[in-house]
Length: 268
Image (cartoon, rainbow, N blue to C red; front, top):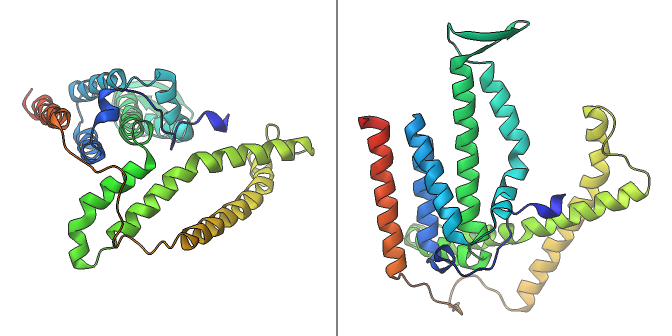
């Protein structure tokens, strides 16, 4: 069900990743994103998959909880896989389906794209949402973007918007599930019929969901004004961000990962 999706849900635990400074984890996400899109060979992709498994073991988060982060993009993964399977240009044809053909290059490209998307979501979910609270993510983003404030960039406002968005992802998912159950009890059917019929059925979910989301946004704005929120000027934080030896060790781990992926990609 929608309530099992881990996107935006913080999992409390005592682990190395949980104790890292959120700025370190944000930089780690950026580094892994670059490495994932840079990797083209099987060896480099295999190393990134191994590093992801190591991070999962370091996080003390149940594997099932981590894999739930793939649930929202499962359709995209399948669609990207099928699209790339039939788009390969190679003389080695495995089999044909009408005018479409499946080649060895197409299968290799499809697997690579699916693995790349999965690793991207797993690393982002693991380093940010599961091991870092939305407040800490907001503070880290504001700290990293603060130098841009000298050029008029709204660092605090951008960080606050990202924090609120992450915070309300699980809330909106729970609201969607409640609305679907309520509509099902009134006779709505979301499981049978064709694609167009199912799309029409979702209208009965989207309209009350949008109404509820706008009402929550209005209530949040009223609550922030009642508490005299005036932006980041003069604000203090309950927990100050500090780099520790663990962060330094993780940075070294990232540098070694970068060097290893470059060697596997361009040297070997």
